[in-house]
Amino acid sequence: MWKTLAVALPLAAVAYAGGARFGSQPAHKASEMMMSELCGDEAPFMAENQAAMHRMMSDMDIAPSGDADRDFSAMMIPHHRGAIAMAQAELRYGRNESLRRIAQEIIVDQQQEIAVMRLAFDPPPSAATAALVHK
Image 1 (cartoon, rainbow, N blue to C red):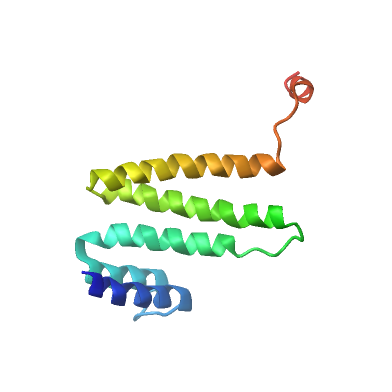
Image 2: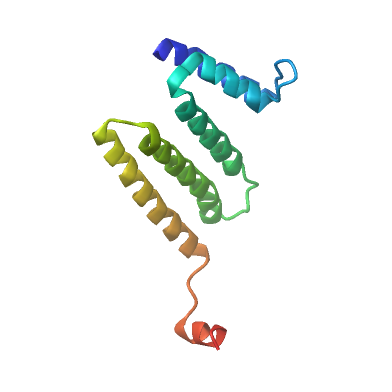
């Protein structure tokens, strides 16, 4: 299986990222077809992880702002979202209870860290401000 994945993932990534087409299929459909043929029953899990990784890498590609803290958060939030998406795929498809528990912990931990990073730049309104907004 690992040899198959070692071949399938780079091929799928190249097909997806490079815009390759098989016949009249768009790149993402061709990638899904390859994944299905090479990974069999594991194809939905691998496809979800591939999509999560692609989205994460794309969202992490930011223009520097000149503020290292802001840039760190801007890159780490999508990184954590990617980890959450992969952990959710493990919960949907995985069977190993130890790994499923780790996936649950990843989801909780990464969500908390995302909240802390957001609060660093968007602090909650003060009680006085909140009272004015709700009037």
